[in-house]
Length: 437
Image 1 (cartoon, rainbow, N blue to C red):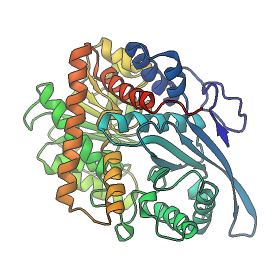
Image 2 (cartoon, rainbow, N blue to C red):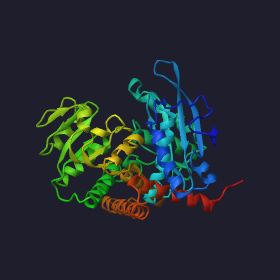
Image 3 (cartoon, one colour):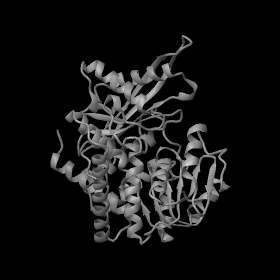
Image 4 (tube, rainbow, N blue to C red):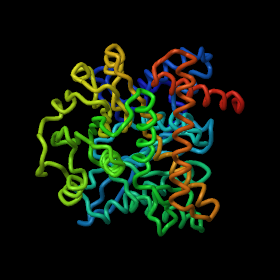
């Protein structure tokens, strides 16, 4: 176990691989730049700055697994717990062959700031297993997840650190984590995991929670920037759980989506795409690559450069960077992914007068509904979907208005306002708690 890492930019722990520092356009650099700006603006004292700029705890575990062919493989596993000032940790589990420790650090911190902005009483965490699930059987994946969970039992649980889904960690993975914790606890520990199957205490509205919250913020932002009506041109980069579900919600609300993209490129129809047909194709084939219909197909770079009213990047971190930010012709950007705009791109967009609604505000619907699931599990009472939807809208609206009020008071951009709000709330909680010597 590694605790209180002195410097996250140059950790002495050689066994924790870092994101290659090609330049300052990495998820960790993006996260830290926003935090540093907020800390400086708030005049955060040096002691509190030192506390908040690094994780409370970082855990690295080895995961030996019996493979189906009789051999044994050892995978790397991590759990980053950023800050518990506001409450227990909560955060995703990511399973990926190219897992990077700095990206997990960034994700954990983003979870902290997101919870703070949205008024959710949790601190942020993030975990991962370095494993390519496409080259392993379901049984091998299950054994890896269960061993990973068992190795972390002293650091996770309903009152310590709650898991949520992420890349290649779906409802089934959450079910394995819950079962492993429950076996060792000798009781069913439902609140230890969110994003579970409904049969195991999972909440309604879980699968499209991020998209629902994003839809709420999108409507508020469009109204603020005087983009009312149903004729506005909206483009979505990413057609997965977030982007695809957002496209569906917009289509159902009568708002045409003129652009949708995935890793294979973008599709454009100025009159509006046939979203149900495209999502049905993607569900059957796994991508939009061979989709047919009334649209123009283009590269990802060309897609970014298309004029539109709103561009919603819902794919990967740093999708907007210094090499393409000058090409963006959207009037407004609403971030659906974690860190889709690099530090350099953010400055370019600001200089061009293109407002950006930051990720820690816009894509917070997932953590809000995870909080709802945790509360329902502790109550032993499932809420109706209409109740969840109404409460989610309230949380998103309150966070939007609080951020906007701070933006007006401090005369800063929305990203700065959201981070000022988040850092101020966490710092105040830490101040009230004090330091345990």
